[in-house]
Image (cartoon, rainbow, N blue to C red):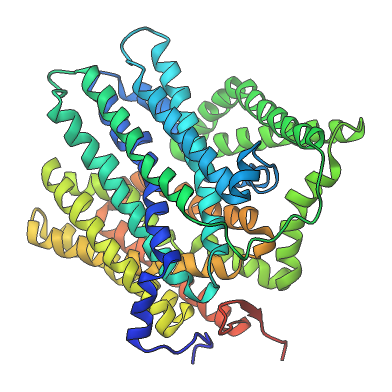
Amino acid sequence: MLKDAAVEKNWKTTAQLLIKPQVLTMLFLGFSAGIPFSLIFSSLSLWLNEAGITKSMVTYFSWAGLAFSFKFLWAPLVDRIPVPFLTQWLGRRRGWLLTAQFMVIGSIIFMGSINPLSSEQALVIMALAAVALGFSAATQDIVIDAYRIEVADVSIQGVLSSTYFTGYRVAMIVSGAGALYLAGYLGSSKESYDYDAWQTTYYVMAAVMLIGIVTTLVIREPENLQPLKTQYTNAQYVRFLLFFAACVVVLIYSYLATAEMIANWKLAMSNFFGNKPLANFIGETSQLIFAAIGVIVFGFIINKVGLMERQLVRENYWLPVKDFFSRYGLKLSILLLVFVGFYRISDIVLGVIALVFYQDLGFTKAEIATVSKTFGVVMMIIGSFIGGIFSIRFGVIRVLMAGSILIILTNLLFMVLAHVGDDIAMLYLVISADNLAAGIATAAFLAFLASITNVSFTAVQYAIFSSLMTLIPKIIGGYSGSMVDNIGYSNFFLVASLMGVPVLYLIVLLNKHLTLKENGEVAKQSSK
């Protein structure tokens, strides 16, 4: 029997949680967090495509997505450094949240102000604007994640996660399908590109972000927010910020400086192994490692000459990691990190190739947009509410197990769709089941991440977890196209489903070593 000791509540009591102020707040903050995502990726890609930008140039904008995978690097700055005036006026979380939201609005307006065809430099400037939007949106995510964990007891994090997830997905429809519809209504199309239409569209999306700003001004600071144990001078905070900025510059320079060497390596390895994707993966990983080594060497030198704010670096980068390993011990901490890194591997790896699969089966773009991007999102929202309520009613661990099993089974339905082919009814069935399962699993998983986060280090620890949960699946997902080319869609979907089987064993191990208390906190079980 699973040992998740969640509070037993009747259905009426559980449903009443949906109207709690903290829960409704997360709906609007989730909306604010979801607006930038499509404006960086899908909507922007279509804008550039209508402008006649080549696909190879469009990949230039993939840099914008790096911010979401590496946001844990500047989470300590968001957690520690006060925002002049705003921190005193609104508090630590709301001050940074309002700052991030204004940064998002400014970046969206910046992007909308650039016609990619106006000059040769315009595309480079737009790429920088997209990176700025990615950084701003990731910063907003850091603050909202911390706020969500601190604003209410961990026992209702499942409902908070589901409402946040709902707001996020609704916003993606607004900034995705809504933006595309608006740009088309204003006169831009593949046959007749109109920059003014896209400019107006992005300006409207910037105005929509005012919903988030109003929410930030209305809500209160979390009561569970832990006060900073140590106060520093403004000069010390500035040196800490400058040190971080210098590390970013060194990272970028080291990465670019090795680009030519790595390109030669990838070519040589591709010829040697006869496998270009593998050679690219090894080369790009090596390039990141070289860049990281450059930052480490730089930090070592700065530390030796006494220019580093050692105590600030220790408190913000070392102590959150030390706290996690101290609470759970080395073995259990590794188990938790492995689980976080692999729980969503099955659905993320499959999701990378899903749209291409639908297109290869013969479904039109309109059908894919209607079924996958609209109907599918609605089903995922329903799933997230089910996952959130069930997490409270039956316990997070039970729902994690159920969600994982459902993902494995629904992924197998894609094998059936591959056999049936261009059948719209079957497409609705598969996407309904897949998104419902993903919503249930995601809501429970976000609640679990909140339960293993120490409120003393909320921003940093949760940023690490949320980055880790997509990093490994995305890396493996990069090979999904090559896998399909080699083994076909049906076998690929079987492999994607089997990837989720070890996760079931990880949940059993976690259930053996962890207990979710009635207050929602995670406790390490005593050794037997």
